[in-house]
Image (cartoon, rainbow, N blue to C red; front, side):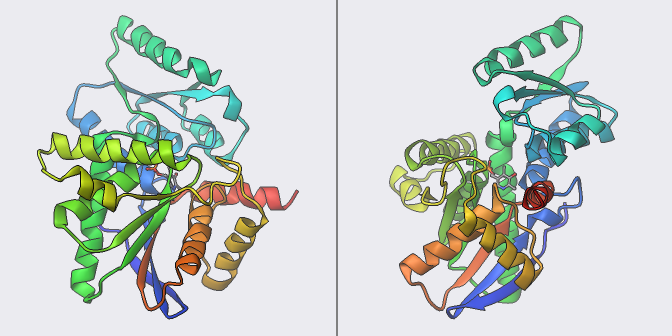
Length: 310
Ligand SMILES: *Cc1c(COP(=O)(O)O)cnc(C)c1O
């Protein structure tokens, strides 16, 4: 994969803001789920799999990308989706257009429904590849270790050092990959995952576990203390949870669009961008070089625009 671009966005309070455009990954509107899915599909392409099974809500960027990767291979894709989050979105319309077979069930039955789907497919002689929601797991983490290397390449080539990296943290794999990259290289900087839904205790533990799992599998020795210190997970901007976006976040999204031509969505990148600006204000940081990772989710930006029109 070609590296995604990093470009300067603006200066605020003598801080220079740069942005890494994961939303420009050239497949299915890109985003972090496209970066992860590319690695999952390398496994699929090199194996004897004939269909793919995953899960996520109707607004899931992950499910859209996986369904699109499957359709581009003429492969069947099965999506298990919780009925609690099944409103029509641009992502769900695309999943349908890509021919994904979507099974909606109560969230408490998702686990069993996945097991049943896999069992039924195998009984029919199929060989399904299962991808956890959001592309969670060591392969997803690897995708963001790779992204971290791209950031280092940019720094070397442009003689710059980012003091902070900010990004939206959901299932935690993106953050785990970035932090693993930092720990492997022993780089001095702060990576801040702005939680978009999970409270710190649970959300941070998921990130910590993902980091430890990855380091273990790759036989990389890092002390628990170093891992703890490197994992900054800020749950101050989750508001009422997944998808909730008060007026401050909406204003921030419109502001970024008007000033920088930057599309942010109200579930992930808009909340993270808002969180970043507030985090920096709270800490009264000045003169820092800051990198924001635009993790994609462009179809959600248009869902947000539709909401505005109502
Ligand atoms: C899924 C997602 C995230 C969160 O990534 P995780 O690896 O699940 O933490 C952030 N931004 C966008 C646009 C996403 O779709």
